[in-house]
Image (tube, rainbow, N blue to C red):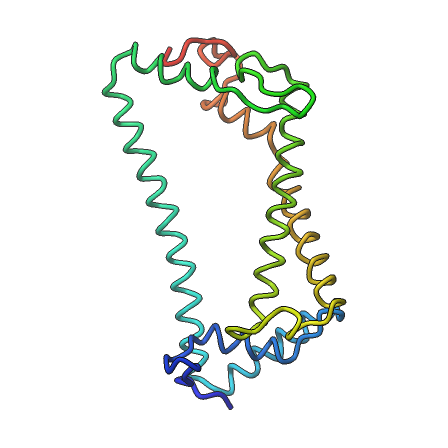
Length: 217
């Protein structure tokens, strides 16, 4: 049974989340792709045997979730503040600020190079999106892979000391599969998101909502 105040090697009390990760790490086999439900059930049963550790773990998870909500609310508050600031600007200043969005130069691909956003065609936008999606999948896949490997390692330990080459490969495949699956969800629904921007009142026949209408009118 784990001690809820078990110290780490630096003398500091380890978080409950860290202890859960270590418990899982000692029992996980990266090659067993169907082990997740079994290990999760085992972790829950293990936590229930130590009420103090369970309480701390729940607090940490609730705290992290609440912190994410706080960050989201703060971001929305900043957006409201920015909207208020924009409302106090002159019409000329607003037009200049909005025009900068169209004057941005975006990279389409190595063959086309950079193009002014306002002059880009739908075909060029899709090429530019594809280039960035490929880059994002690669970068996020590597980031998740590195975090997966780091989660199972002790301080100062190297990858080859902790894992076999096969486990490293399987962790990479797991990380990239997860990122690719989530990227599809992020990229889907673009048409509905655009409709909400073009027609915020749900009226597609409102002339003020039509493409090309001057900003603020």
